[in-house]
Amino acid sequence: MAVTFRDYYEVLGVDRKASQEEIQRAYRKLARKYHPDVNKARDAEDRFKEVGEAYEVLKDPDKRSKYDQLGANWKDGQEFRPPPGWEQQFGFGSGMGGHTEFKWSSGGGDFSDFFEMLFGGRGFRSAGARGASGGGPVWSQAGADQEAVVHIRLEDAFQGATRSITLQSQTATPDGKVSVQERSYEVKIPLGVLPGQKIRLSGQGGEGMGGGPRGDLYLKVEIEPHPVYRLEGRDLHMTVPVAPWEAVLGAEVQVPTPSGPVTLKVPPGSQSGRKMRLRGKGMPNPRASAGDLFAVISIVVPKSLSAHERELFEELQKTSSFNPRV
Image (tube, rainbow, N blue to C red; front, side, top):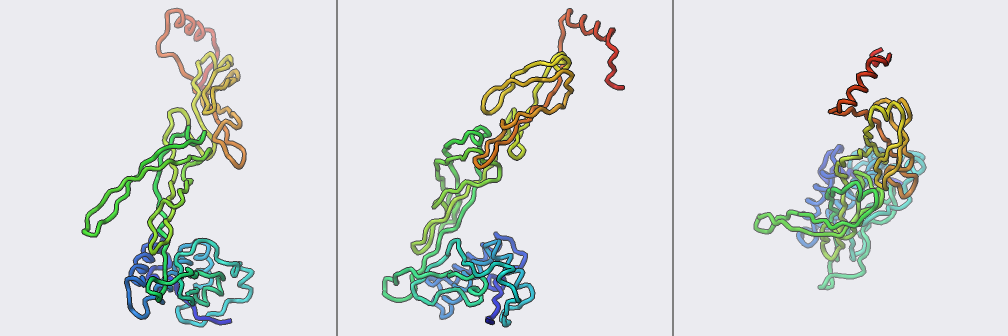
């Protein structure tokens, strides 16, 4: 089967190296321009669908990667014949899955044959109703997904928690002014969440159009610096101060952990920088083993001495043959 190649980058007017933000921006601009309720030109509906098809591919990293590999040597309007073995090589034809941006009641709103050949599935689906006047397509556009950064305490990530947060958003009013709005949420922080992971608040994103559902709000987690622990992956690192005689003779010292204090055995002859591992005392992992806690020994000397303490240290200085620089 041969179909006409479609240059989705040209449809959206973006460079092949465009970022996801640039692609989304171009799509929104063109979708507004060719919207059936805004643009009454004869070809507006076709352009609107074409823009939606291009965005459906380029917004998805997997589809975009497959399209780039097959489309590198083709130009818009050329007859397209997939190379031999293309189904096995790229796994096409298994259905789109994911989210559909628009719904139509006018029939004949499917993606192009080119899209169907590469990805299968359907993009524009029947809405099952017609406009109030009985004619023309009934369309609906899902709201855009939004993202914000939320800062949480390490203890909240370690134990899981529910916290109230307030986010500000800015929107432009019809008269060109900026309106600042605040929205508050009760957010469930999952146990073991790590920096960079996202918490999804379904239906809390941008408003849809034409009765479309709201998008989702994604909260990107950042964990605030902690006075005791430093987080690396799921492992925690902390410094344990010990006295010189504890390091020389060995000792049992109590150290804090996020799950409660534990007793740490300091072996005799421990040096500053010695790292001791407390297995399973790091950040929990709901799907696997928890991280570890690494206690790093730091030998601390007294800043002031009593007369007797000074005598003991002076006696040690006279009798000891130890030379740390040899």
